[in-house]
Length: 441
Ligand code: GUN
Ligand code: ZN
Image (cartoon, rainbow, N blue to C red; front, top):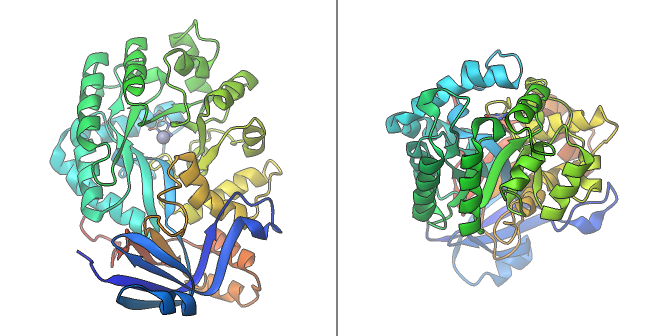
């Protein structure tokens, strides 16, 4: 659609590695009067405005985003597409919330037209908040994966997701079988994985809703397609852990269940990882599995406090995510803020350079996708968020006294939301929805 190159002018911030605290200027590149040249969905040049303009090798349209901040689009490593209408449900803890609100809502996705309609709203919410890539659980219906990935393709987004595999402890209408989950997942994977920017994710919901036969089928699929990600949940809630122990009495611990069926590896994303024992952390490190922190969800469902320091000290990669609809905001800014508070309670205070690294390059690395997304590096996909730290009255007033980039980031994280997102570029095309509200719903 968009064939002319664009030169985006503004202040640029992109990370090269995980910052080691506030003084670590080697972990990022900041350009005060910077520019990006983008064409064919890719970043072609990055540098000072003067340099990029002078050396551009093709005609371009110039878009002046000064004085705003250009960063790589945010990455959300765990959320649930069929929970758009579950967010903000007044429930007790995890298992009640699943039974009372989540399973009923997910049943509606048997109907493709429902999935198509919700997909419009879902992607509008992501793009309004500057999120350009996300990893989603769809429902157990193959239709929901079609709705989810078709709309991602229309918008040109790099999205990951898969059909939730679940064959017990849920309403009949949501249950598949070990065999059908395997064959449906395989067909979807064959159709979608690597088509455009789509990535298929093998998605057994969690040990409680899968029979051993189904987890075995998930493991077999991962073995056949080691290039695919696998996602599931672990150690989120004490009642969940106790029920899992009853269902898998021979397993050493919760992770032992997934370990036995060959579900672990560097492309395995384990949601929550709150109540982990030392053996489990050791096995996560050995297998390279990723721990996914979902702060707003963990607080909302009263699940517990993720221990980042302990997890990372054990040598485990971590990522951060919204977990809509257990989570309460689509915004990665709100998510970083709540994550900061969860860690504050454990005296693990994160510097804003670390949190913004996490939501961009850190999450990209956790997904093994940093060659494509998560930075403003030349050759990567032009997924970009444009941020305004003075978007609201409280922000503008606070910014009057802010002197450093770190302070600006912290204002964005603490006070920002979709109003701070000036524009969201997906593969070089501006796509922030004009009006969130009820648009397309
Ligand atoms: N564990 C199993 N399913 C879910 C889910 O949908 N959300 C959360 N937060 N935890 C889960
Ligand atoms: Zn989840």
